[in-house]
Length: 486
Image (cartoon, rainbow, N blue to C red; front, side):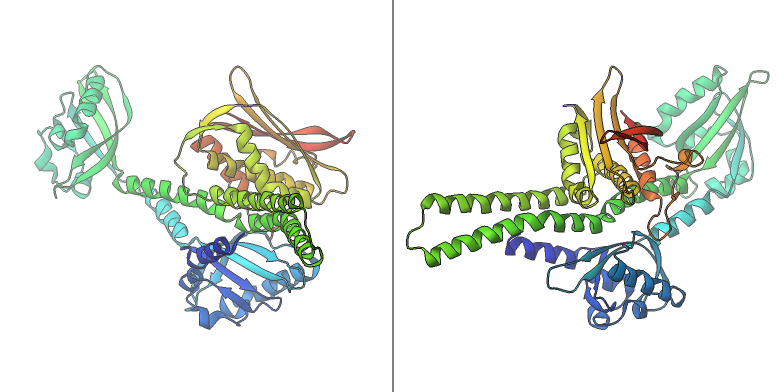
């Protein structure tokens, strides 16, 4: 990375909103505190620098555990896993965050731990509001003829639409329907007139105050008296909450990508080490040649510069892959070659796999699919990391395999490993939110849940998992195989 790129990256981390980044030395003293950290925790940069982590944002009951976890990382290389935490604001109130951690280790320099925190407080509050709303079953009941004339209505009409019961008797509810919803409502009334039942229909009605509210109603026609009996529920707030929930889901998707920043930064550090070493060696060699040789072959100079340029291009490509993964384009659909998609995933995860001594192999066809590539990458990286976590403590050969094929009906992605498989008693639960077999300090159970959500809801595919017998280096081992179908 040249000085300009490095300056831009540092400026990005310093000023990026809603992503609090802090740095700590071995003694847990603050060495870095960006602007988002000031906003999230209430301490200014000047107040935080030099202070101990546990004295700033850790509640008393958590202090010993936090200190122990950090000491274990520094002394025993026991990584602190990402997860949800309850941390303390300057004024003492609780802040819910999703926290990721990364340890920077450079030759001849003390190790430094960095934390990347995302504020979840608003999301928690919205979840509480969402659940409390749906615990209030308040319905409007009505009787009308098949032409829409209201014959009877209960007292809920006052609280829901602002009218007295008497005001609406013998009037047509079509007079209250939003002009844009009249055509669809007339079609539903025709079905009722023909004797069909309406199980669920949404439209908007004018409130007494002149505003429109959203109602969801169901109705049946009694052919004996030719009357329509119906029930309606005010879903205006639910609609707003649904819009907010969709927004929150996008935020959670984005947060789950950002939560991976710690591991990605670690990957980049490992991936850069070799090319930086090559560049340094080439530059030093050329400098020595210039100092001690009267004549230097131009071909030698050109060859050295080619080596430097090739490695610089590799470093630049790594940054591009990293930056593209975090672009906010969750709604962008385009045609992508899955072979290229998996190449990007490999670039983002290779250092992590190589450092864990995992043998990677693949069989991927050229298959084009219209999708949001970044969302698919996010979903698949969760599966890659799941396999890596299953393999990392195995004493035998560790193997990981990816297959992407197209049959007559589906595009089928299979991701398998020889990590021991999944217990039969829990295999049906692994896509549930917050379900994890790992200790709470190293897992939250959100990764596989998010993968399932992305594939099934965002991409209209399906996911499944089963235990298999996996052959690695001529030996057979128990393993797991995840399957995605589009």
